[in-house]
Length: 113
Image (cartoon, rainbow, N blue to C red; front, side, top):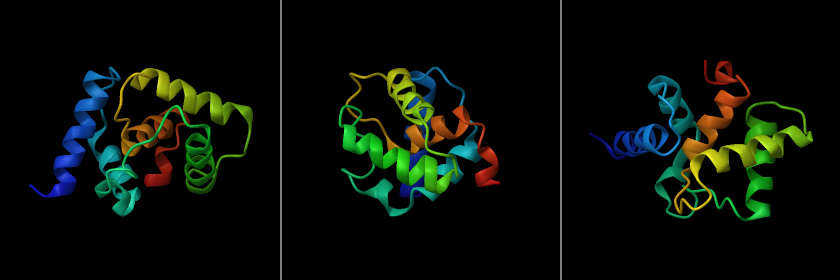
């Protein structure tokens, strides 16, 4: 099992046990691959849910650029709701898990088709 497969297993476990979601493994794999080398960097692989500038980065680089959504207050509401589901006190909010949940939230699975 490669490093990426190990990380995907960790992400799937987080989705099941911390977010009460049954992961679509095919989509989770595609979202993880879409994160690129960031998943291997301790700092870049997580989202700091309490830092406004980090959440802005998720909004601009993922929701607007990657998923093609238009900027609106709903984007930040969705990000905050995902952070809430993941658990505000959860120290490691993995970027791939957050992106996966946002992809599902906006029904944008087709982006990874």
